[in-house]
Amino acid sequence: MSFKEIQLTDLQFNPFTKIGSQWMLITAGNEEKYNTMTASWGGMGVLWGKNVVTTYIRPQRYTKEFIDANDTFTISFYGPQYKEALNICGTVSGRDCDKAARTGLTPCFVDGTPAFSEAELIFVCRKLYEDQMPPENFIAKENDAKWYPNKDYHTMYISEIVKVLAKED
Image (cartoon, rainbow, N blue to C red; front, side):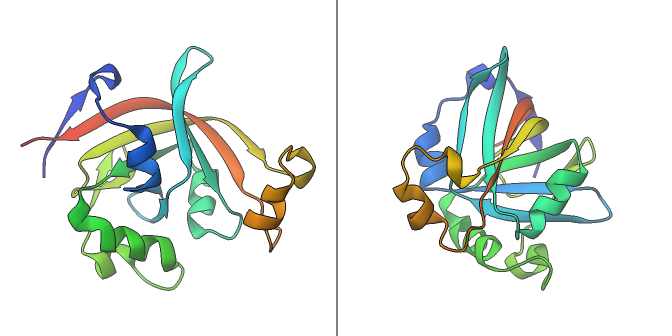
């Protein structure tokens, strides 16, 4: 599959649907070794004069090691025919299997950063900020018990969207 670079301002989609219902893959690493994970939490907006995405990753996720070791990563979005592949990428660890082989997704690399050829959209992201989400900072205290019974608090990453690629028809 081939991609063309587009302007972020040309995108026309609902981020609540794309992230919350259709999900996305967060992929990091390099051509030698990488991992991907499904995410349904995240945000998009403008911060520090840059177009940014906010992603949240729990400490036990294998992909976090790759996010932490690299300056860039990709976020990618897929059509409904890939929902099962995204389900697998969110429930099986890359420590235990080759997710690309198991799902049939085809790795591709954008400026050395991994993504998958089946994506409809690929955002190449450069990390700007990271922070832990400690329980003492929850204003809505019920979120601690509801979302963190194992006390495995997410790391929040704010990243600049440096490139957007769209699948060519």
